[in-house]
Image 1: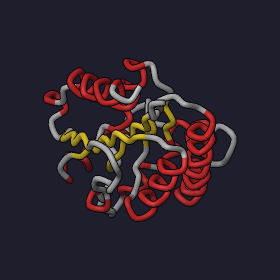
Image 2: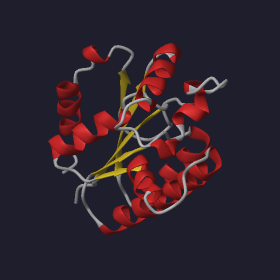
Image 3: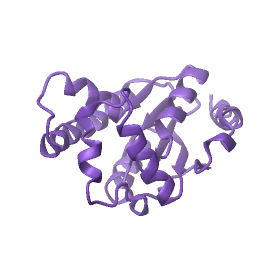
Image 4: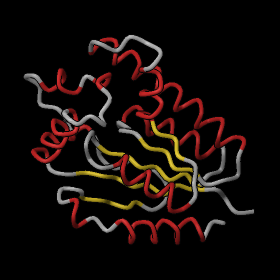
Length: 189
C-alpha cells in the first residue's frame, strides 16, 4: 500500500506560504491545515487587542494545528497540506515523529525572500483590510526588525525539498510547483 504524503509549506512571515498552500490545496484537491486560519477563527471568540493577547491565541492556534495534524494523519490515508511558520528547533522533531509514526511521505516547500522584501510585505499586509487586526502586525513592527527570517530555514525532513524564492513574486511559477508536487505525490498513490 502506498504512503500518503504530507506537504509541508513553511517559511518566515510574509514569505508567500499562505497563498502558495491555498493554491496547491485548491488545485490538487487536498485538505489544508493552516495556523493563521485557526487563529483568525479564534479571534472572533477571544480578546485580541494587544500583542500579549494575540500571542496567547497564536499559541492556542499552534496547539490546535498540531492536534488536528495528529488526528488527520492517524485517521486518514489521504494526502494533506499543512502551512505555518515552522521554526526548525521546535517543529522538526514533532514533524519527524508524526511522519514516522503515521507512515507519511514528506514533500517540503520552503518559501523565502530577502529581509527588506519580507519587512515591507509584512507592513503592507498589515495595512490591508484583508489582514485581521488581531495579528497585531503594526504594533509588532514598531521599533522591531520584523520579520526575522534568519530563524527559518529548510527542515531536515525525509523527502524532496522544493525551495521557492518569493523575493520577486512575478517570477514564482505556481503551475510548475503544482506539477512537481502532483508528480511527487502521484508516485506515492
